[in-house]
Length: 292
Image (cartoon, rainbow, N blue to C red):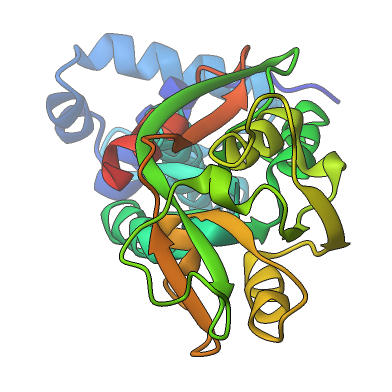
């Protein structure tokens, strides 16, 4: 059975149920007593039961009224909580945020960014996922991620990106390499060296930007070994499988077996925020603002 009782009627009922006096309840609600009495009558008609026993000298709750008093208080409290949560979600102050990041960005503080956001918005649950750029972009398109920190992303339908940092590349060579003791080198001097690098599926833009400092007169280095993280790439360089060119921040944890050499060219790698083009939620703006 449907009972057409709204929140305003429940609040009026509780005021009378607590005061057990129509005059005092009307004063507390800032309404006229006859209007309050009529509202209570409408509630009773909607429910099909009497909620109060009225005499000329007293007002008392009926058994049905006693039940409703407890339920109404609980219902109103839950509604307040639900409405508060709705407002907080709308303001980006509550909810869930799935964030991806490239591992090479770790030295630049993405985890610290997340912590700052969590401190500012404790009711937002943040879930972190690592991966390389092309896979993170695919997960954004599929709706599995809300936001990602990506490096040198390929243009992707349905994804918008916003650059927030760029950095130079450095060369990484084994300690026994002929250039290991040089202060800096021209990247093209490495074009004939075997290269350790990411697979092509990591992204066309990322591949071209990383190799650009080495390409000379159209000649490109030969990749002899692939790996899916910079940590693995650098360890393979360290054991002498080849050389590589990497963003500066990706080499901060390079093993002692690797020599890092500044490049004379100013080729740069870029970090971007990536999200769906149709996602304008306040929670995303709040996260980026806290991160920045």
